[in-house]
Image (cartoon, rainbow, N blue to C red; front, side):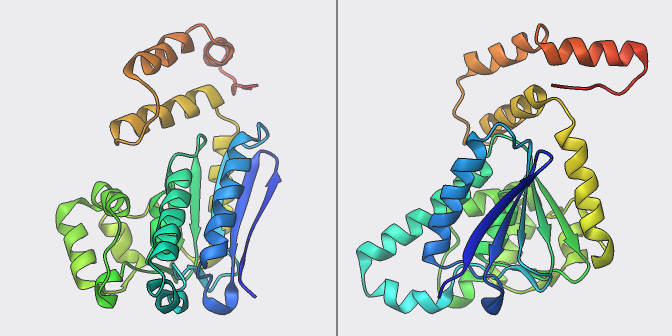
Length: 258
């Protein structure tokens, strides 16, 4: 039996879990399809203000695509192409998710699992986390969009080092090269994630969604035209969130965005 992608929502924070612990939360073909479906549903749910992505347990975030499927897929070019498209589409859905996303990383975060973490806005990792992008060791490539995300985060020199060598590296190295926002003791990670998620859930949805749209455009995968982005910018000044944010600032109180 394959693994599962599960999701639950609590006080505006959706938690999406990669659940395949016997295979270090590797993502098989069926799970990539489940992942995309879950992301579509969560993106359409107005109750969701923040998305947290994590692996089941604390042994692994995700070991990536399920390598045990590779030989069977390679024997059927059509299935192989469909599987690759499904993986890339699921990761693109996560990257373009309209609200802030947080990767909560314990243990192994490798290959396609690292790709999922790179597609999130924040990456918070425990000090037991291990990273690596290993396709070169299998005679394979990282996709263009995955490579672009990595290059954007860590820069050209570190990107080449990670992809050419295919070596595993620890969280301290990941933090040093800009792959992580925070590296914490494992016992403190969940609390730090909850604190960040709560802060984001209480922020202006208009502002956060607009910021994501602007970043998506700058980074080359946005769906908004320059004119639409200008309208988002202009309309913010007359929106309810701006009125509340301005009043809260002048009254020296926390804003209560609706």
